Image (cartoon, rainbow, N blue to C red; front, side, top):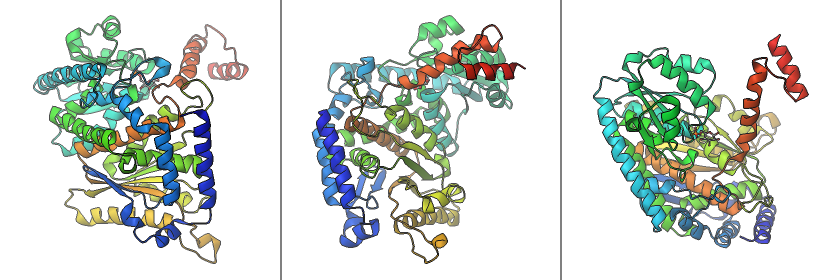
Length: 506
Ligand SMILES: O=P(O)(O)OC[C@H]1O[C@H](O)[C@H](O)[C@@H](O)[C@@H]1O
C-alpha cells in the first residue's frame, strides 16, 4: 500500500472511532438484533465471535477496504508461494510449507518436499528412541526453539497416553539447568539441543552443562539449520541431527523438526495431527475472501483497536489450564514479529504498531488482574479462548469454567451502572470470543496457525516485515562485551554499568 493510503486508512479508522465514540457495545447490539448471530466465523474446530468489538458495519467496511487496498489476499498468496517477503533478510517465510503444499511456486514445492523428508526422519527417530529404554528427554532451546514445543507438550502430553516425558530448559540462569535435571537419571535421558542458528548463547551454555551431566554423547541430539556448528562444537554426528532451514523463522518453526519434542511426547501421529489442524487453517486463510476470512478479521480487529481506538495493550485469556503457556507463546509470535517502527522499505511506519500483548489463564487471573480490566482507566481489548468439550468427567468444574468465561466477557462488555462510583462497572470493553470444539492437536494447530496468519496480515496492513527481529541484537552484543568485565579483566564503557559492576564485584 502507498504510504499515503495507509496514512489515510488510519485517519479514516480514527474518524470512524470518533463517530462511534458515544456508541457502546450494548448500543450496537440493540441497534442490530442480528449482530450477535452475524459476527461468527468458523474454521474446522475453531469458531470466533466478534460481536463485542466496537465497530459498526460502516467501520467494518472501512477495515475490509483497507485490507483490499493493502492487497492482503495477494500478499497471502505471495507468502505461500515463497516470495522473499522477509525483505530485510532477503528470504521467504515458508512455515506454511511445513504443513502442506498450497504453494504453487517451485521454491515452495521444494520446501514442502524437504519438510516431508525431515518428517520421515523424525518418525524413524521417534520410533528408535521410544524403544530404547529412554524415559525422559530434555529439550534445550530458547525463544522460537522453545516456546512452541513447550506450549504444545504442556497442553497435550497429559491427555495423549504420553510416551516419553519431555522437559524444557531455556534460561541461562544455572538454576534452570539444576531444576530441569534434578529429578532425572542421566542414564535414561536424551538431550536435544534445539537452535536454528546454533549460535545462541543460552542454548550453547546450557548445552555444555547438559552434555557434561549426560556423560554419554550417544544420547545427545541436535535440531538446527547449522549442522556444521553442531558437529564442530558438540561433536554430534549427522545421523543425530535433524534439519532446519533459513526459510523458516524461529517463532514460526514448531511445525518443523523444532517440534521434535512434541513428536517424542505425543507420538509422530499426534505431531502430524497438529500440522493437519494448521494446514486446515492455511487452506481457509489462503482461499476465503477477506470478509469471511477468520485470520483477516482477527487482524483487522487488532488494527481497529490499535489505530482506531488507540488502545495500547491487548490481553489473551484462555479459559483452559492446558493453554496456560499460550500467552507466553503469543508474546513472542506477536511482539517479536510486529514490534517494529520501520516499514519494510526502511521508512518510518505511518502509525502505531503492535500493542503490548499479555495475559494469563482463566479463572485464575479473575482473582489477580481482572479488577483492572473491569474498572481501570485503561481499556484492554481481549481475546477470550474457551474449550466447549473439556472431555472431563468433572462436569461441575467444566460448567463453572465455561460459566466464568461467558460471564466475564459479558460483564466487561455490558458493565453495570451504580451511583457509587466504586461499585460501578463502565463496561464497553471489547473482546473476541474464540471457541475450540475440544482441545486436541488438530484444534491447537488451527488456533496457532490462525494467530500466525493474523500477525502476517497485521504486518501487511502496517507495512512492516514480521519476519526479522533486529531489535534483539544490541542487548546480546553488549552482554557478550561485558563478559570480560564480569571476570574483572576489563572495564565497562557506560558509567552506570561501570558503577554497577564495581558494586557487584565488591
Ligand atoms: O533457534 P535459535 O537460533 O537458537 O534462536 C533462538 C531465538 O533467539 C533469538 O534471539 C531470536 O530473538 C528468536 O527469534 C529466536 O527464536
